[in-house]
Image (cartoon, rainbow over all chains, first blue to last red):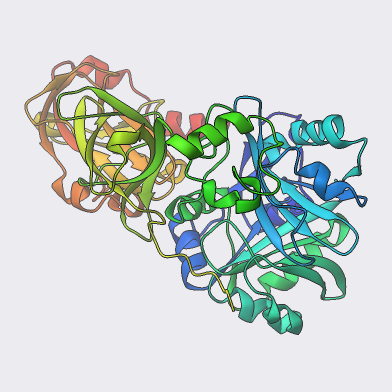
Amino acid sequence: MSAELRKTPLHALHLELGARMVPFAGYEMPVQYPSGLMAEHKGCRESAALFDVSHMGQLRLVGDGAAAALETLVPVDVVDLPVGKQRYALFTNAHGGLLDDLMITRREGDLFVVVNAGCKDADTSHLITHIGHRCTVIALPDRALLALQGPKAVTALARLVPGVAQLTFMTGGSFTIAGVDAFVTRSGYTGEDGFEMSVPADQAAAVARKLLDQPEVRPAGLGARDTLRLEAGLCLYGHDIDDKTTPVEAGLTWAIQKVRRPGGARAGGYPGAHVVESQLNSGPMIKRVGLVALERVPVREGTILVDAHGHKLGHVTSGTIAPTVDQPIAMAYLGADHASAQHEVYAEVRGKRIPMRVTAMPFTPNRYHRG
Amino acid sequence: MTTMFTPDHEWINIEDHEAAVVGITMHAQDALGDVVFVDLPEVGKTFKQGEAAGVVESVKAAADVKMPVTGEIVEVNEELRADPSLANSDPMGKGWFFKVHLTDMAEFDRLMDPPGYDALLKTL
């Protein structure tokens, strides 16, 4: 284990709980606890799981010009985002590729932004370089982030914070959890109902312990987080999306509101807009799809996909045997003409061709609380 | 000693020389996590010592199962193929992978004995 790895505020708690720690994005993070990945995954779908996601980057953008400035970096409507609402967004580059995916919440005095751990330094520089003159970019390294996910998450959290049950999917507000000031959004990365809580780093362990005291809640690590998000059809930056994939190829155009599309009042104006707009008009050459294997063989990232004659059709970007769906599932990019539902392709695994079928995502139904 | 070990965390038991049993160790299954899939070798195939004869996959990772000795595969564990979790619940017993007919006993003698394997585990 490298001496250079950083620790989150919950590091000691993870060790106390018997977590297996691994390096991730420069941090020492829990990949699983003694119960194991399957139990943690199922616990999230059936009850409630607590994840430490403090390694992710949290920032505030302050100033009247912040929303308009941020719109120059993302193909998303930020200007008309109402107070209390959260939105998924994408940083694009000059070729329409993705620099990161992120969450933006409009609050009374600022825009609250959460970015991926592996990209947080680059994203912070990106913001300061391009819009630092139009608003104040404030990184929040002294805040922790906890995610409580699952059908019983609201029961557990509302016992400590009664008002939190009023939040609907993708809304947020300030609450007090066991005496600690927290900013809470009703969102997450599992496809289940749940909450993400930003709390001061020095209070994070106390809040986590209080949550783990609730009978519905069990700790879960990055291993389960990955299988949960894959079943939910959610992209992992650096795997399913990266600086070579556009939002259109990735099937993320739902995140581009009408006002930012060709013909909209604030169309374009973000890096790579000409590429994205061209693809919105005439369709992308490749598309991200969901796949299910027709034999019980895991098909992993990097696997080549071919047709019945062995011609390359695409490649897998994420794959596993999904604990809830109980089949091998994957995300992949295929040529657009092979990307339709029910289309059969073959994965080349150890010299054998495993048949797979293109499937709509999510692989397991999303259960967001829309109110 | 009838059971010896490899540095890649396989074990081999030669109580029956014609059909020495091979599996992965307690340490290996713990490191892998929940095993969800095994790829077993074809019966009748011969592999050299150190060659990958099979694959064991957990939700997160895949690992080769290497031949502890040179020999011909004489039987594979169909029960394990049907229920890969046996590799976690009983790695030294019901979770065996395959049986091999050894051709060179000297190879077996050069593997790690139980105290030697325990010593290796302490260094990890």
